[in-house]
Length: 138
Image (cartoon, rainbow, N blue to C red; front, side):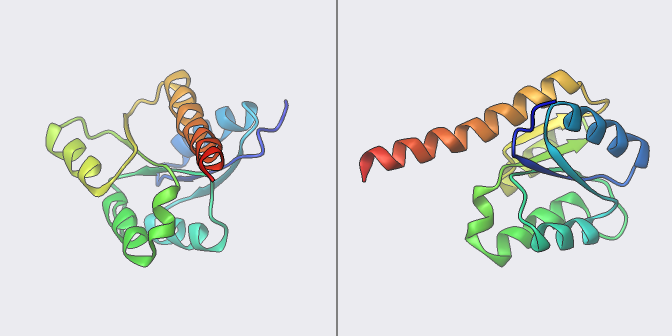
């Protein structure tokens, strides 16, 4: 498998789900770091800023919403990292809350790996296109 050179932080308290996501994304060439809860996810993020974050919403101790709020409060530079919620919550209010917090996308479980990979590729590709566009304007 060819490496994409991109890193993914998957914050997910269900070990089976996180293992499946990690396996699929690693097969697609991503380096995947898994965190089992919001606190360890926030810590992992601050130790090595990933290229993209996948985060469950319902987790003990610190919800995905709280993780995103902490990152937003810490520094604006974290806003450049795409943040995707992965959740079993299918209600409109939860999705609106996630989007209002600034989530780049909202994927419901069970996860369709092809859709998730397409979203990740689009989000990471958008950043590269934006950098090319900025370079042209300099």
